Amino acid sequence: MRMLATADLHYNHHRSKPVADALIDEMNRVCSESHIHALLLVGDTAVADGDSLEQCLSRIRFAGEKIFVAGNHELWTRSDDSYKIFGEILPQRVRAIGWRWLEDDPYISPDRSVAIVGSVGWYDYSFAVPQLGIPRRFYEQKLSPGAAARLSQFDSLLVDSSDISPHAMDIVARWNDGKFVKLHRSDEAFLEELLIKLQSQLDALRDVPRVLAAIHHVPFDELLPPKHGSQWDFVRAYLGSRRIGELLRRYPNVRDVLCGHSHFGVEASIVEIRAINIGSGYRAKTYRIIEL
Image (cartoon, rainbow, N blue to C red; front, side, top):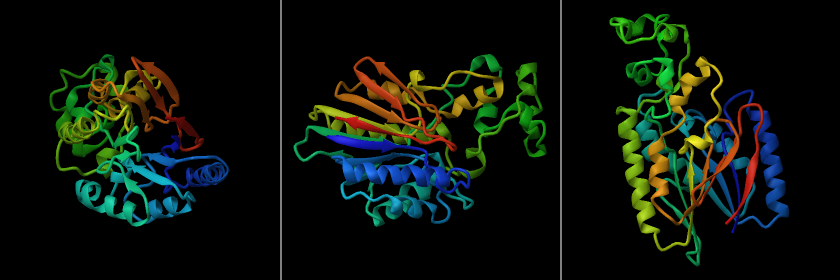
């Protein structure tokens, strides 16, 4: 089986859309000229609000299996319920234009030799950098101590500052999921729900010789970008979770793992797993052809 995979098209973003259009044109050409069985998008195609998602998916010309995984940006909305959007509205929209919503519908080849499972994944701050000296309550609110000091609505986070390192007050950063994702549950609780569903799917596929897992968030330390300064290191807490990787490693037939999200391309061998972070970003995009 031959599959083309990409991630992080960010089609709603003014700077990203022209680059995404160019990549889609290249993908359409490759799919028409090569023997591709499936096309996979590993999250952050477009935000929930508006019709950028439909615009993007409709531009992709491919007659084979079209597989969609959501990213955190698909949950971005100015309404009040990202959880409903993720669980009900997005699957309907994606299926309506001919794509498989992988989160609920794993792909299994006709001969049951290959399967593809997927999840948005999420984060639980397990990739946070302890040396930054930032207490957990700031990660939960998705902003650094220096940013909280500049926003009066977060004064309560600073009432007792005895556990905040002096250096942390110089870090001014904010993770925009805090403004645009409304799950009505903790990040850890949401991740737990996703892992339970993913585990159930993997259990049902134990007899399939080769399974590929497409997870938008980063599941392994080896796929993280290098550390390069406190402002950037703050956001490592939101890049993924070690719990995802721990679950995947429990299944010997999971031989391939794809992710995106960090916009940093890297490939690693983790025991028997070929793990790839696709590495598309706002200004430069790429795809991978995966042989299964």
